[in-house]
Length: 367
Image 1 (cartoon, rainbow, N blue to C red):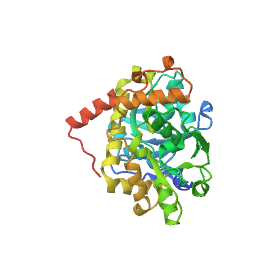
Image 2 (cartoon, helix red, strand yellow; image 1 turned 30 degrees about the vertical axis):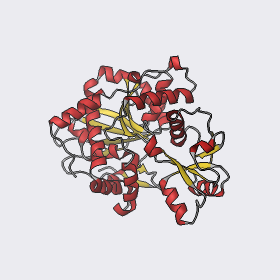
Image 3 (tube, rainbow, N blue to C red; image 1 turned 90 degrees about the horizontal axis):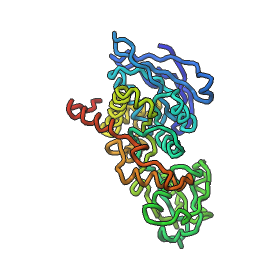
């Protein structure tokens, strides 16, 4: 097996041979090779994994992007590792690329699928001919905490500054979703970035410099363990209130139109990975630990948090689709009469058909 280096971004970045992260699965004929980035794909690290059934002819090759190797994309790596794509006659070329570069590549046809579903929606709002086909994570894992004793309810934040990681991030999107859901104006809050450094974020929230700030549940546990947040109280739990597209599977309208059978097979294989990841806890934790080169105990809590954020049926309901488009329109200054309708943003028909096929086959994930 050829060895290639794959960057990790779970707690810290390091380099590990792909052969060690994704060991060969008996019967899958797994092999890896390095490919050279095409000139027009500058800034994207191309990583190839070819999954071939033993003795079978090479299937159709597709390029798929993922932002980085972390738990949010466990469904993709599970589907690869379990051979679900190979079973559909598909060979995968993985390209590590954030949404900012992956989505233009999807629009141009340089890649066939992207797991940056949220970025794809922003592009659709600007006129890109793409569709979101599956949703992996449909809620953010952020909580809004008051930092001062005088802030007792969400309404007490009117006109005040709220700390977020960065402008336009999932924390801001989640809070704007809550404002819209509660019928409050989008300028009800003012957003102040306090950066991605966890220590700095905790210090700012604990100091009361800002009236409120977004925290990850793990941040809250650490802070309480250190005797912090004495005047803090949770004002909103986004995991409970928000339903949106935070990651998922997207493809171009042109591919859907010209190769619907390929799209159907790819969606089915990906859906199987999603079902596996949210159904088989112990097996998924072990697989997650293998991806991250650590022990199951080290990732169990992380997996449980991620599992709670996974879309139950890999889709979002019509009302959430409508709210998401309205919210994106407000954030991107797209006039209401120029906003796309849900049917031009989401196409869950492939997912529905795949679910029906799996039900007919009585398929269930196996460790």
